[in-house]
Amino acid sequence: MTSTAAPPPPVAKRTGTARRPAARSVRRPWTEHGLVFVAPFLAVYAVFLIWPLISGVGISLTSENITGSGGEFVGLDNYAEAIRDGEVWSSLWNTVWFTVLSTVPLVLVGLGLALLAHQLRVVQWLWRLSWFAPFLLPSGVVCLLFAQMVFPSGFGLADQLLASVGLEPGIGWLSDERYAMLSVVATTVWWTVGFNFLLYLAALQAVPAHLYEAAELDGAGAWKRLAHITLPLLRRTTVLVVVLQVLASLKIFDQVYIMTGGGPDYSTRPILQYVYQQGFTGYRIGYASAVSYIFFALILTVSLVRPLSARRRAEEAAK
Image (tube, rainbow, N blue to C red; front, side, top):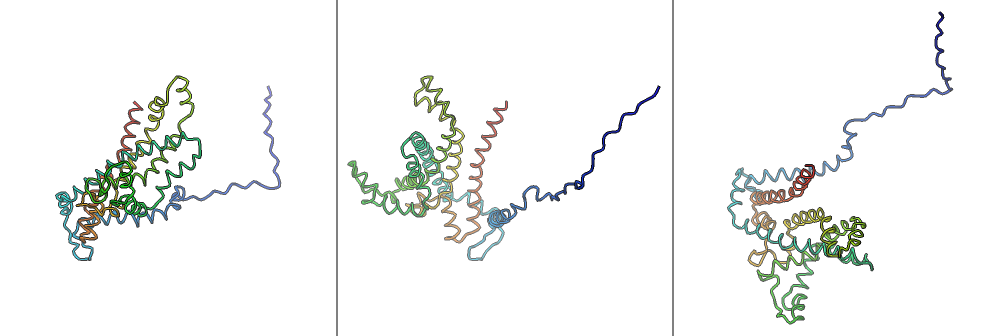
């Protein structure tokens, strides 16, 4: 019995030019992650943020003076003094009170303006520009405008409006403890509401139109569509706006410093102005650093609210 071997596979003809193996690109691990591109930013970030943050902690543990004298290590004495200092707590209360008074209208007015601009069909760009434009103005311009034209007692725009409706003008908007904080809040709302308006308007434009069409076919009116479609879909945006607004309001300084100087009788002085006074007027840099780090801990706690709440909702949804 004869066995026939399988024929060998055909050999491909070689062309005149031999194919060269692809050159291997030499990659270093630090270039694969893009560190070479972010290195300049990291250097600037470390020099102007990380290092001052670390050195500030060290200064808060000393009796450092702005004149260069002192600097002895005192441990946690500055922090203990800050906790016992009544002016720290009164300034902190003014900051929290301003945050409460400003956050509510800034969220509601921003939402209302966004709903109105979203429904307008005539010169939408003009309405959006006019409501967002004040946010682009510097704080000094806005504060001087309100202090010199809106709130002067007797001849300011606010008193003129009161007189036009038959009320008694002459209110000390910036000199009376009952109205000084409200005046600062009104200035802040007019100035910064455009940012919240822009966030809400972007979120409204992302809501699918077919949801409103289906609800309208089912007989839902405008208020029901607002309550059951718009507001629930804007919940994440509202949380974001509230957190950002609270953080911004806690850091108030410019409006109070320019308009009232912290008065009358320190009724509007925020915690940052107290830090400024202790460090650059009282020359106590170490103590001012300790107060600022206590306030930093408060801001850090508030900023962690949104990530923790988002994680909790994600865990509940996963269950």
